[in-house]
Length: 375
Image 1 (tube, rainbow, N blue to C red):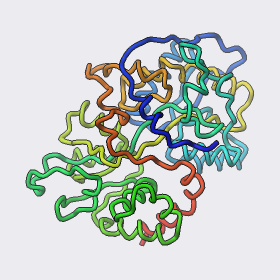
Image 2: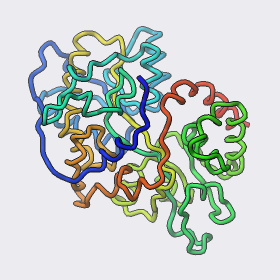
Image 3: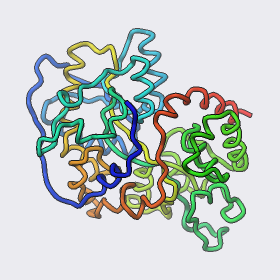
Image 4: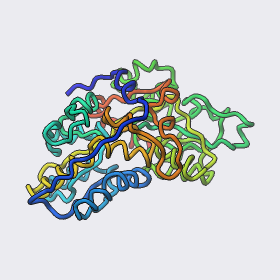
């Protein structure tokens, strides 16, 4: 399926607060009595636990076992399939990884309209999720972004604060340690953008060997001052501890550090990279395990459940019908709308991640990036 980079998608996600909905809590005969659900850990897994897992366990008595291995999902599912021993029941992945797993036959094809609940007004799931269904194996959950954030009390900056993503590469104005994810995605895009490549041409350039070299050369300018992270919980902690002064993570992680932990950190929304996250069902499950997973998914991806997740983390729900239900944070009582990546103020200068590009080029660019890191 070809993904459409459509601005109406962003507009539809930015909605006023209203409405309510209920899930179909029907029983599940001949289903397994436990599930291993793989996700990302930290604040994100906590939001899923509160919005989906605990209500489902209370409703059914089913045990949900949490695994925090999503960052290695592609490699581990390949290995499980090779060994003919798939131990995971449901896996949370970014959209590009879902496309790769689907193409390799490692994820089940989903009939979204028969498997998932319709919107409260009867709109079929496929229309409610719309263009966010970027693969026939992918069930979207949230719109999130990878953003930069910075310490707002750095004495060496003389009271200046960055207003551009390219502050990442400006060591003269903003000296100090950086922290970036230990993978090429987002880093390569920011590097080219801050090296003068027009936004609309980023992926054309990155699709050439010369473009990859250009991005790595730009990253070379800060490589010696960069702490590379693998888990998204690391950069907020590095900034909170003063070990780094500017870095990348997911907007929900920064929200947790800023609003819930009151850390001296500010978000830099400029050139935030929009992305999607959602579920894939691993291929090779027994009928009993698959029945349980599909029953869970019908519950966990309905309109109300996706809206409920936004009570705990600042990610936009993937269903259009969920967006109007986004209200206040469950414990802080603050309006969550202004903290969403889709908020009009935050979305003034976004970068739309190209899922198809990374699904097709990830392995090759990964190899070059890791070789560059090892130098």
